[in-house]
Image 1 (spheres, rainbow, N blue to C red):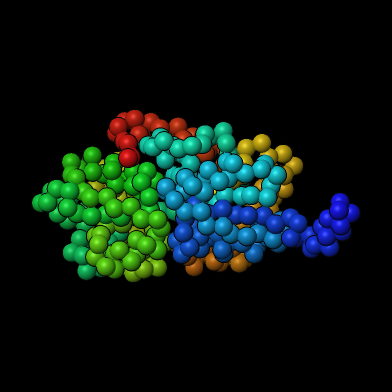
Image 2 (cartoon, rainbow, N blue to C red):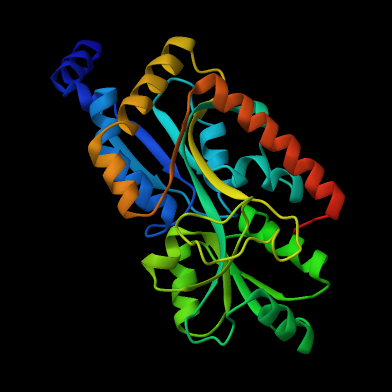
Length: 305
């Protein structure tokens, strides 16, 4: 029996024996999923192994993160995740994992956070939003891709600073949100700036330190009197305990992938800004962001049910 199994394994292609699963904690069609599928062939080539994208949506990326945390630390399971699901959500709701469960590999992007709306919603400026929210407290509906993520917390922070109450409606991904916007179930969505052009939405304000090159006529929250700065950055992670040689190999593959014309041009078409950090720098950045969001959550007493 053992000899037969060995023969079968030897007959398998090397890629099949070394297949790598890239977990995405959001459903198909959203920004994280599209980015993963763009990167998939280039990462496969860089690793010398077949990479398979697996969508594990739920709880603002928490389901996918937990799946990685429980995976074998052998390099065969990766997570492509927006940082909020790992460094922010743990501060606002109970999660079944710890920061020590993850090994950052490399950062790949850092997207603008933009408040957006339908072109015909009647909401053109932040004062329009605040006025409507004050007119009917709790009625103005805004969407997020899950409770406790960066976009949701940015809106809760704005509510506190502006003294208004709005109605938060969470969805499983940006694809579902676009359907809700089209169906007039929500009027606002705060998320990655690339969605503005992709879905022909109207940008109201950006949560950045200065005006964005992509939206030079759109004011920052700071200009509008609210000191709120957020980005949606994403990176690749392996489970904690992964051997150093596997971390080194995966980091090198990530860096090669991010330099390929297919990924560079593909992310440009998605209006997804590239920002690459190597493993050591990314790990330090991840830890600093975890501490920063912890202070923010305590300052605003932010909690998500």
